[in-house]
Image 1 (cartoon, rainbow over the protein chains, first blue to last red):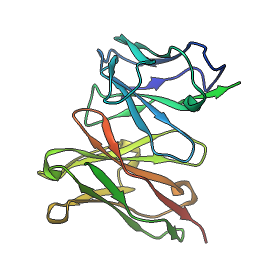
Image 2 (cartoon, each protein chain N blue to C red; image 1 turned 30 degrees about the vertical axis):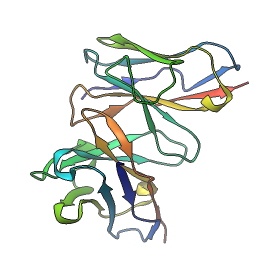
Image 3 (cartoon, helix red, strand yellow; image 1 turned 90 degrees about the vertical axis):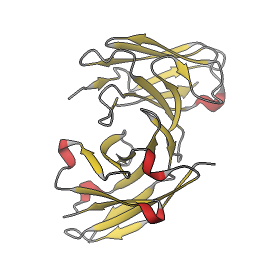
Length: 108
Length: 117
């Protein structure tokens, strides 16, 4: 099974800062990684798919990069509404999925 | 507009079984995999399994084989998940999400299951 590891459970940042969240796959997944945002009390929402493609309606301050086993999700200028938990997910072996453990973004 | 409407909050006894639903609308139900995801309080997302309503093909996380059973009724565009032999560890929010084309593009609002005696 493919394991997705997000090494930081928490990250603290300030409004206007640039922040990057990393995710590592246990094996080569090409570019088959998605990123989701989950705000408190809400369902997850798709932001990025296939490592770097922004989903419909997603602001361009959200970007993704990476291939193989190492992936990065970046918010170029954090806004207060970006307070959330961010999850990576491999869709290489779809319909079998695995999620990373999540990174909670805290706004100072 | 694609919508996934999940059934409401459930309270169940240990050892019991429950069946929850996810009613899809706004797209061709039989053409997309439907996935189920578990989230325990304060924890991350855990993939349970998926069903392809077009032919009832299923894929399960090994951890949930024997615990979860996925079915779909095409006439009502509804996916179901039955959880058996419930324990406190099954208390969680359960989401359904459509796979389109390889990732979860639409999500239901979640069904909260509480297992308590």
